[in-house]
Image (cartoon, rainbow, N blue to C red; front, top):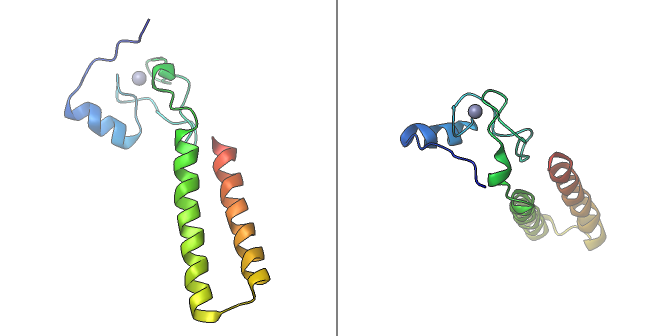
Length: 105
Ligand SMILES: [Zn+2]
């Protein structure tokens, strides 16, 4: 059985952009940075029909990876640090990004 979510047209889109419930527009849609709340805290709508699994975490990892690798290439091209120093700095930075994204997922 699927949950019935009435369409509000532009109001529903604005509720989604604001991170609010698609039914009432009042309750919070997210419980953290990328973690979907189990249900609306205002009207009780069960959000299990919209569970995206690991999609948001993978999306954040791809963005963080692009930023870290891009920054490493820029620093390498401009300052030519030893490879071990570049690896140590960016391995630590990327590990921290992954730990933070999984801590909220
Ligand atoms: Zn609601």
